[in-house]
Length: 119
Image 1 (cartoon, one colour):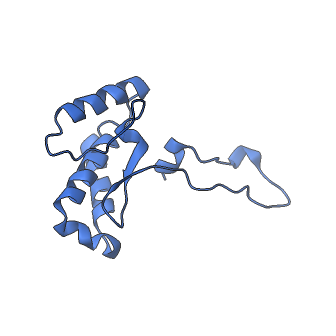
Image 2 (cartoon, helix red, strand yellow; image 1 turned 45 degrees about the horizontal axis):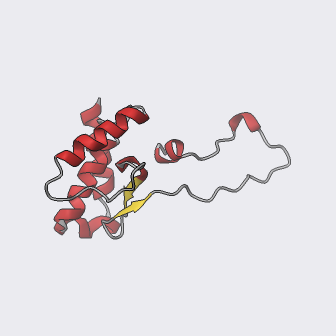
């Protein structure tokens, strides 16, 4: 379950030519590890529990791997940039309405923070 999700996510984020620099970047690997931990082990948590999990992680973050957040934010609002290995605030991609003569609204998916991350 959760361990499989973690390993698959970690593998997906660390393999490939565009991520080859990460192998020699200990901080980037740690950031990706924490990101995968949040989105595997902590993925099913509700907002209140995500805040608690974020606080729990921060209490144990001796090497300052977690992103700096504002008061109402948690690690769940951030992702690791695959080009730099740095934390960045997550933003949904710009969405454009599909152009078609016949638009099927029942199959239309408007991107949200959770639906886009799940892709």
